[in-house]
Image 1 (cartoon, rainbow, N blue to C red):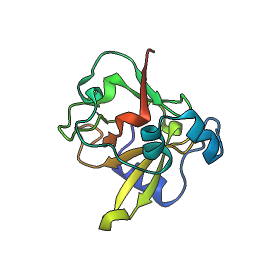
Image 2 (image 1 turned 180 degrees about the vertical axis):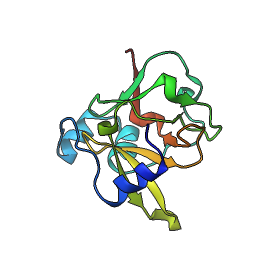
Image 3 (image 1 turned 90 degrees about the vertical axis):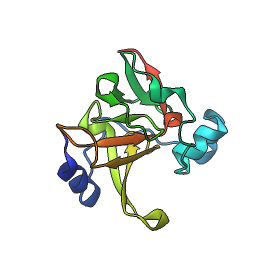
Image 4 (image 1 turned 60 degrees about the vertical axis):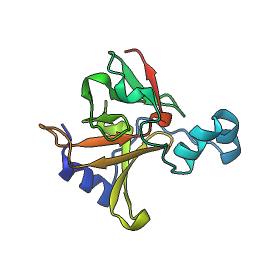
Length: 148
């Protein structure tokens, strides 16, 4: 189980080795993705809080990267954070999510990205429920719900 110290170590030193890599040109991503999804995943945008019904979706299944299909989060790790974005306590696999220090907007945060295609997912915070204490605050536009 990952904890905040693990996240800081990954963001400061080296991310886990991805299971594979997917790289496309910006033109290929633009052709593949809806414009709003492109802004969030490829240009590090943020969707409006409470703009997706995915925040209140708790049926069994997994949440995969909308860009490359990599499994990222399981519904068993999802919780109601009240923030307006889907929130999770752990990724499906340590190797599927990467972390980068984000100093935009005058804050220091840890950005969460798909480790396979480098899609921006959201951010990770140390204010989640125990036992991990992690809150992956993820843009719904970066995810697609899939069955296990």
